[in-house]
Image: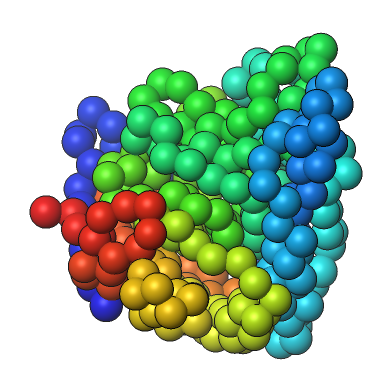
Length: 301
């Protein structure tokens, strides 16, 4: 297990913001979003997106959702599986794209898990939607930010912790851009609110009903040491007996190296470091050389 902190270029660093001391943290909201059924798109139904069905995916991440409230730090506040799952669930309204409303959905949670097909697109993660949102905006994908483009700008409302149960959601070659997902560039510099930590996978991750306990174990361990629990619970050294590994990654931001590493190594649902982080450093935790299907061994060198 390896972690590293890296400074952002000075031109990309967030401006200094003064914060008042925070009161004791109230119970947070936990939400779950998953797509398991793309059958309408596979049948060619207009407005529906096509992808391979994964009927066990909601059961798997239910392991997290059902256990996340067991310690009383968080409470279950919404579970969306399939249905009218368009870009509006995940994208920020400041993109000015039609229907974007994450403040009532993903960014309304304090912790959220998102389970949907993912791919490596340029230097960012792209998730596969169930419906394309037409006629307002016809697109079957949701893009994490890269450069000045993208749609998932999080943390400016409520979200502190994001868990991506999705392939390529934390590829090693994309981590230099991942910090952009941690804030809304319009609102976060004004209100100081940002995502604290995101977790995902380098390369392909795996779905089966037999992995429910892994996500439940992460929910329990995540109460206290989130990054360590994600890596420990979701790592698999021999996926399906084919010699591929499942490679979990955790990622955080901070005002400086010590702040970033402290957040990465100590935060959990029961221990949220206040105030919200500035973005001057990024840090990540991974298994060096972890070799998944769909990508090469993890390395930042």
